[in-house]
Image (cartoon, rainbow, N blue to C red; front, side, top):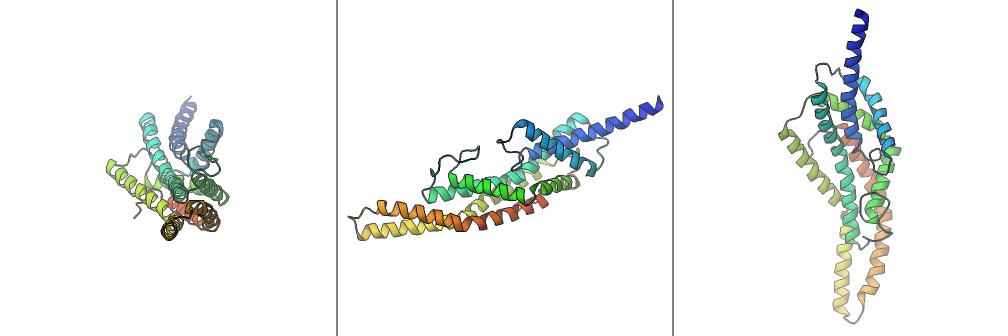
Length: 253
């Protein structure tokens, strides 16, 4: 009976640790690109969360002494924070696509796109391509490493201070907006040059219907620019994704 009692105590500690790890992992993976997409069925996303839990749990420190219910709430908050650090990058890519589409009159090209979030076709194309490239380059390994690293930065059962979370959130939001504007800069420059040229032509030849000439020109130039700029945009975005997963709670300039 004493042996059974010791086994029960050990089982309770193990199950508590697994539950705490699952709370953080599920909250984080639910916001990760690819694995947390709403295009995937709920059962698939749950299976992914369980798989990451089985990978992360043996490598995290012991969570002894952490109360189960308060610990789960804290772990969910930490997991959401970790997932948002990556989700901000996806939002930056969507933001860049929206700016590019609005600047070059391609907002309605090819319909609503293949992503669940409503966005222009360029944003859907960039987002889907970026996530696909990240998955090919081993996103699952990077996510597992980030989850394990998060326990070194924020141990199980420790809730970060509200001031730290606020400062981190402001930094990440500003970085996402700046990144979106930077990635869309080639399209903004082309649109500015197009509108200046169109105004000059209209000024010189008022009788000419410049819109009939300019609309096909900007559409063709935008598609060509997308062909040339998309590889560089996606490579740069994946480099930033790797940096964020390597230091998910770091403050960005």
